[in-house]
View 1: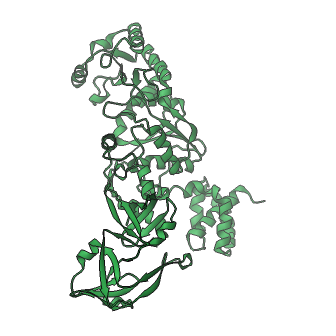
View 2: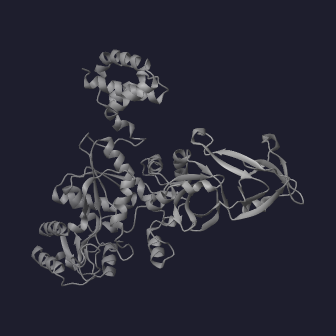
View 3: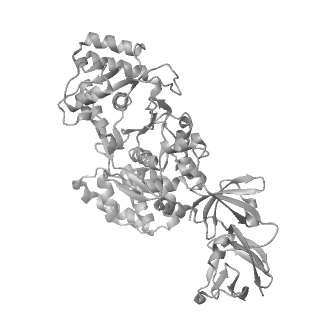
Length: 559
């Protein structure tokens, strides 16, 4: 029976062999064992074992290596799935607990996906636990809860194959819990009910001046707090503030607001509650009670992190480790939930899966694969530095996956041309040039063709053109057949085409900007099933969305 330590050596050696054309190296296995806790004084004894195992592995076929590795991959899965992510500080196997914490103002978009995927990767790395908490406190006037988010967000997580512990936790179900800990702060003389207007509150902070309500005693604050909860005060009349140092260098830290009154109806709890916690208070409580060990959040929430730490110190709680990340701007993707929300309400966008929202639902309908989104997000790494990356990087990752898709002709805004002297031709064109076993598309052509209006406008007299996989032609006073053979040295400009015949298909392609391009497609697309990804040659990768009457509808993904 092989010992566990030997199994790990075997697993790491197999992983190294698979990554290097079937040949493992002793020097590549040793660093992995150091990461597992190997001591320097143990090296001399373990080297012979590594050499023996590496020799055995290198004698195997690649297929045999793959088969053996599949049985042992769980032993090295943590290291292999990191994809460049740094180690978490003070993280132990099986002890890491992290959280996903979306505010339900709309579905997740491509910008949101990164922290969700990184959390998921870390939990896999450490064989830990991932909690999914919908942060549905009341929000602000500008950033409201959209009820459909309760369905759309979990739907996107499932698509991304993010595995979280169920059931989902809703903050709106935990209000009484937050009230209880707020009362504890008041009893510790660390919080007070304030009746200052927002203007006075701001002015006092700037002047480092304590307001008169800060001097109220504990008994009076408990009374005022209960009156807040019982509905005595209206929105804007009373807030609960925490006592900090009013001389603190950052005005935003001075006696921050913990609770406020909102009279708006909540989608889930309706009008049951009117007193709502702000982000840092609810998370200070939940991060402790839920046993969170590591928190990933944007640099824009550094002040909230400081306030959480301050609250943890008051209660004497152990602090989770907080890691702040820099903002990633995605060039070429105009992302704004508030704008999308407005456009959906007015009817300009047809829903949250409209391609202009950049939601994960819209990416899926465009034919972007979940694996591509994950690869794109992990390629950004984890850093505090802000960066801008082009959306084309996502498309490059997706192209690696969909490059194998079958190919068809689609002629956008078709223009009919006649090529004189062309012969009757029967031709077969492979569904994919690299996969001949898939079969061919059959065409019968003569002199009448459809070409894209865009191509038609670019045709110049005396220049040589080639209908793809068919023949060469030119234009003088009319279009004229030249030759059938493809001669690269002639440098004929390629044009895709369709023969003029009755069995062509009416097709429409929804573009990322919301415009629809109409055209004709070859008869072969009639057999497509919804969700199939194809490539319209010289046009781009598209996903077949379905059939509507006599029209075949597609969503454009990328070139």
